[in-house]
Length: 255
Image (cartoon, rainbow, N blue to C red):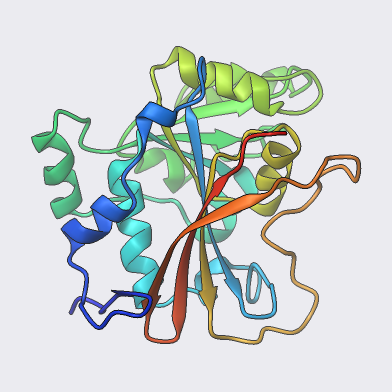
């Protein structure tokens, strides 16, 4: 059953085609020389990015519906290793309908998956790689252990994108070299924080879950240096699925 989603102030239920149009990538506004970076997060009404360590505990049917449609249009999914372990990125990440939609438009049936892991603490024999629908790309640091890199190169393409940590600018260059123009970033907070500090957040799709999580959970962004200037956002879209809000923000260009 499709979960009803409406525009704020309207009773008309939006179809998947309506939602795809609402979340269409504006490639005319793409920054020169690099991909567009769209970040997608869910947070509780009191700002928590996870419940019991997983963001999945915050999402509902409306969030999951939009989440799947955002994946449908992306060239690559960019995700931190911690999020991969916590959320379970195993097997097909798109359903048959989404894969058919992509192939009908000349896209690969499944978006690429790029994993950010500075220490390469991933299991090359695990289901993430055994059941991967496409060969993953791993972005790592030059200081990662050589034996870890050799083991993972059997099951993934491993690219150095920074010296001591994965640096967002180098990650962007690696994705550009592979022809990825539309990057959907799915977490976690450390990854979001590093890209925020580098000025590489072009868009934020934020679901506000009607929950109070309390506790000491992280916010959706973490680790950004205190010196990083705040970046103003423009609210361009408000959708509603029951008591859940689905917000879309664009980054305003630096002054």
